[in-house]
Image (cartoon, rainbow, N blue to C red):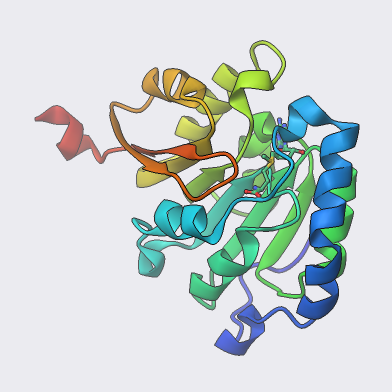
Amino acid sequence: MKDTKHAVPAAHSKNAKRPNRFLGQWGVFLRGFIEHPKMVGSIIPSSRFTIGKMLAPVKWDECKLFVEYGPGVGTFCDPVLAHLRPDGALIVIDTNPLFIDYLNRTIDDPRFTAVLGSAVDVEAIVRDHGHDHADYVLSGLPFSTLPGGVGPAIAAATHRVLRPGGAFLVYQFSAKARDFMAKHFTRIDAGFEFWNVLPCKLFWGWKDLPAQTAV
Ligand SMILES: C[S@@+](CC[C@H](N)C(=O)[O-])C[C@H]1O[C@@H](n2cnc3c(N)ncnc32)[C@H](O)[C@@H]1O
């Protein structure tokens, strides 16, 4: 396990192996899709427009642990690491060993940890890495094509693992994820990004502080 609490200078957010990473990124992603189309759900990584819009509401100064489900080839990882505070941590969870190997080879940042596993197990993963809760959880999972029961279980576990005031950030081609989120998150903001292949729906599910829900 990496020491995610270790403070690092801001320069470490730059990926030292970026050129190598950029060349192989699309090929690795396409291979992942061909091998597991239903689990990957897209042939092209998310666009920079989706990334910018999705991350816009994050309060980075309040974020010590950022968790990402389904990072694929790490499209969101660099932008998250660029914003993340020096003593923050990014834990990404993916079921595909091809992607986890790729991320471990290409992202060199002590705040970064890639876990081979399922988002269903996020609570145990967060705990095993020394954290009580996550501040934000981001998901690029293809909720519509995941095996039965997996989507609802992930939404429930995510609500439990978030601290009050934290948020579940979800982008997807369909609105399926919103159905699962709505069982746990009473306040869900919605958006849309046209400049993505395919255009996608964006959701921000807020785990309100007790005072916010009582009104
Ligand atoms: C559409 S890709 C997202 C790629 C990337 N986040 C992006 O925006 O370009 C979906 C990813 O979810 C992963 N995945 C599918 N089921 C999962 C699960 N239960 N837990 C964690 N990752 C999962 C796939 O392996 C794949 O990497």
